[in-house]
Image 1 (cartoon, helix red, strand yellow):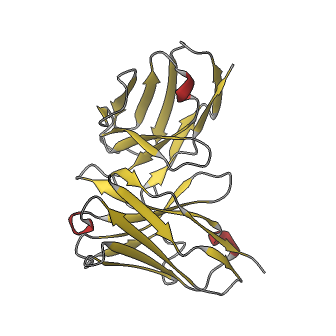
Image 2 (spheres, one colour):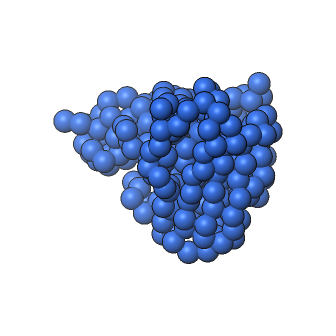
Image 3 (cartoon, chains in turn green, orange):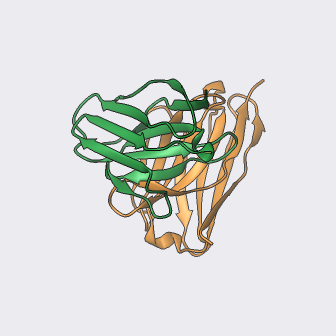
Amino acid sequence: DIQMTQSPSSLSASVGDRVTITCRASQSISSYLSWYQQKPGKAPKLLIFAASTLQSGVPSRVSGSGSGTDFTLTISSLQPEDFATYFCQQSYSLPWTFGLGTKVEIK
Amino acid sequence: EVQLVESGGGAVQPGGSLRLSCAASGFSLSDAWMHWVRQAPGKGLVWVSRVSSDGSFTTYADSVKGRFTISRDNTKNTIYLQMNSLRAEDTALYYCAKVAGGEGAFDVWGQGTMVTVSS
């Protein structure tokens, strides 16, 4: 199975900060990488697919980059609604696997 | 509105069975590969199973292979997860999710249905 390692596991940030979350795959996954946001008690929400393509309706302050084994999710200016947990997910090979998540908290 | 609604969760003893359902509205399930993903309390997301758009092809995580069966009824716009020989480690919130195109991203999720396996 492909292991997805996210870092950091949590971070504290202020509104307006630039936030970067990284995700590393245990082997190359090309660009088969998606990012999700999850708020407490809610289902995950797709933010980014194919490593860098913004899902419809997701604000442009969110971006993704990377290919192969190393990927990043960046929020350019953190907004109050961005405080949540973020997961990466690979769909290169079964079983599709997720990172353990990065919790973004208010500083 | 595109929506998935799961049902069928509940509390069951080890060794028991449950059948989860996932009903779609706002789109035709017959166009989409569908998946089940679970999340144990306070834990991360784990892929469980998938079924092809016509139901002819299914795949399972090793942890549920031989115990769970995924199926679909496109006439009812619904997919199912038959869960047998349940174990404590199957306790989780079960989501059904739709895959968008060929990228392998889950673009529509249900709200989840909770399965608790305990004696």
